[in-house]
Image (cartoon, rainbow, N blue to C red; front, top):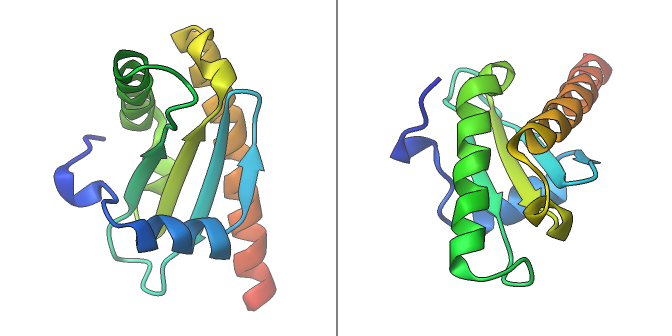
Length: 123
């Protein structure tokens, strides 16, 4: 999966909608939030939140690049019908790529189960 510009969230209201409406799962290094779309055939959008508390711009950009690479590799379960926001925690600075990847996969698995259970509750 390749991330295009159309798949990136750019507006604050998009981030706020996902954080307020959808379920979220907190891991040791990241927090994932997702909000299902009304039309599941719409393409998904992804957003990354990395605050200045984490470090300087070089460190924040490095973490964002790592998360984008993880999304490219493991983002297939969220290909259509969901907006996803990844919030990086301060511990992510000291973590290796494999630790970050492991934490993302674990949180994504839990989040996918929560989204599926919500869909079943609606029907």
